[in-house]
Image (cartoon, rainbow, N blue to C red):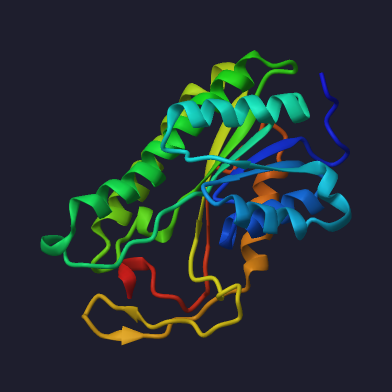
Length: 254
C-alpha cells in the first residue's frame, strides 16, 4: 500500500481541466494531497498538470467521461494503480447549456446536465464507496460541488437546478450510507466567483426579469473552503458549507 503523503492523502477531482475543478485540484496539491484530475478533455487536463510545477509528480491526468460507468471504473483503477488508494473524491464536473424558459428546454440539454451533474456524481461516488470500503485503512471523504441553486433557483435554469437538487439529496444519502464504512460526505455551495481568466463578470437574470452584474469573490475563497472541508479528520464532517459574496442575491434571490 502506498503511504499517504505528508499533509494529505489521495484525491480524485472531476472536471479538473478548468475553472473550479482546476483551482481546487491545485489547492489540494499545494496542501499536500496527491491528486488525480479527471475530465473529458485530455488537453485541458494536461494544462492543469503543467501548472503543478515542481509538484507534478503527485498529480495524474486521467481523461474520463464520468457519464460512462466503465470509464469511471477505469478512472479509479488507474488512481489506485498510481497512488495506492483514494481518500477524497471531489465531485465537481458540470455541463454548460444556454439558459432557456422551461417550455423551450431541449431534452438533449436536460440529459447533458442531469447526466453529468447527477448521474456522473453517482457513478463516481459508487466507485469511490467500493474503493474506500475495501482499502486499508478504511474510509474516505466525498465532497460534492453543489451551488446556491441547490437551495434557491435562478430563472431559466430548470435542468441545472434539478440536477443540483438531486446532488443535495445524494449528499445526504451518501453521508448516511457512508457511516458504516467511515466515509464522510459533505457539500460546498459556492456563489459568484470572479472569472478565472480575468474577464468581466456577465450580467445575471434576476427574479424580476431584469439583468444585473452581481458581486463576486476571488477563487481563493472557494479553495480555502474546499481545503478546510478536505482537511477534517474522518470523525468530523462539514455537512454543508455555503460561501458567497456578502451582497450577492441568495435568500429568495433578493
